[in-house]
Image (tube, rainbow, N blue to C red):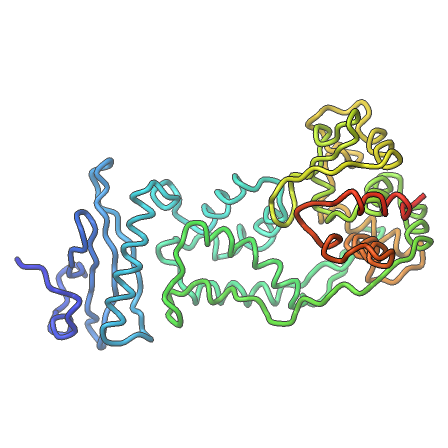
Length: 379
């Protein structure tokens, strides 16, 4: 039986539903087909992609959606593009060609590439125990993620914990929602193509960040306030805080450093984890190198430079409460956080007239920056 030409609007409109809800197939190239299943109740229908996998001798199928906002020839054009892109992913051995079925599978695969990242905590708190985790990737639609986002927005954020262990909560800020959506968007983006705009297949549209939610960190601590914060902090977190006052690194980058990243002989520090993911090496002045040498003494190369009493590395969840306690004890503004220290150091560097492009560079920290830091270090 001759296959219909789905590119012709008239041919599509004359198609009748097949038994077993099997789509009508249109051959795009060898082994790759575009399918269309007309609706039994309304105009239009649902589009599918099919790929023949010679290795497994099986056909793989993916539901593309109805492309409800598109009309005429635009529907076929977008469906054809999506089908070919999906087939290319499977054909090249992409993630969906393996044992990746659900949203949770996509998150776990993402963590294999980015272990010990902030994403791990986000997935644990907001994905794995949520209904979204069990949604199959080939069935994932914009309405699934819109529902997940609403649940995320309503979930309270922990503000602090009392000495008795009682948790205190606050309403989740839009900036927090934006940050918590990033890991899931990244995990799904690795394995799914973006859906056609303004359709339910456009899963990515549900994860667009709130505009204007992320405000600049204006809070500044002078050298005396930073020293008071360090002196007030418990012994466990004190070295980590002091390091934040010595180098303008993001807290996550500092926490990820291991013994092998510091070379005592050459006084160099290799920073392998940062926002842009590009490793870089910096030379430290003697006073800062001595501080790092004290931290790695008797530690294995794989152990964290700044560790907790348990031996584990610091992370966002573990440093938050000790810093909050130190902030309260030092009588500093409640909004002070680990990032406040980085902002304060960068502000100092700008004030000593170091070029702002040099200070804000994420690729390298120049000798001029380190020299300036030596004169601004916390005692």
